[in-house]
Image (cartoon, rainbow, N blue to C red; front, side, top):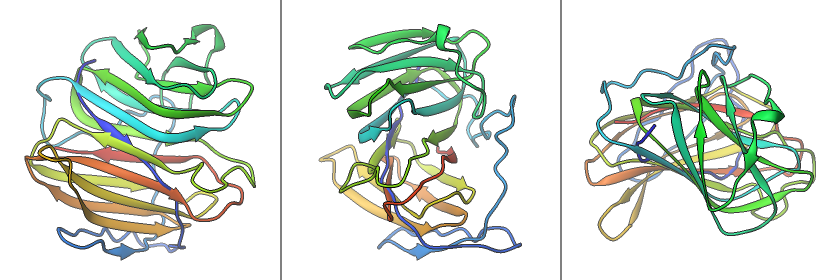
Length: 259
């Protein structure tokens, strides 16, 4: 799997509950705050990520997750459609032991025997699996950056952030930034069902020339969250995630597609 995508996250809240489908928010200027009704996100075994509007995807994708902390025994999961059964995972910086494990889908349990220590660079053979999980060991681990590079069949993924116990998100410990590339013009979509806790998700377009970020949309709440936006050819998509409350937080599965 080779393709470039970078992912950033931070956390935040605001309830959006109801029986009707979520109301997407789209903006090309200042951030737009919205709340949305819950939607069902299928994460049952065998479920594949959504199909991008561009098939097949040309060139490698690199996903980057920056500046976050994994609770002890918990992981960050990236589920994709890969053209080749290999993915390269690289860690930058220290902050506690991490391992990387192939996973079959967004919900399947990790098989410890398939995991390996994550050093400077690790090549993972996916086999029948469709993604990887980066896991902390017996203690929480801080992560400067983890990069996942693969060759995709489409530019779509399911990103699953871990559940957290109350009191595990002091200061910015639960913030994160996720980047998706390489830059191309077209539609960006993100859909996530409601889960325990309150989050804020911010979509930014980060220019490849100068790295200047521009906020496209902001959603927050304790219910379902949804973003619709249009990216320009000269900017990568970056998702910032922030937990608004330092209480219990459930795992969040984000279904994302980008041009």
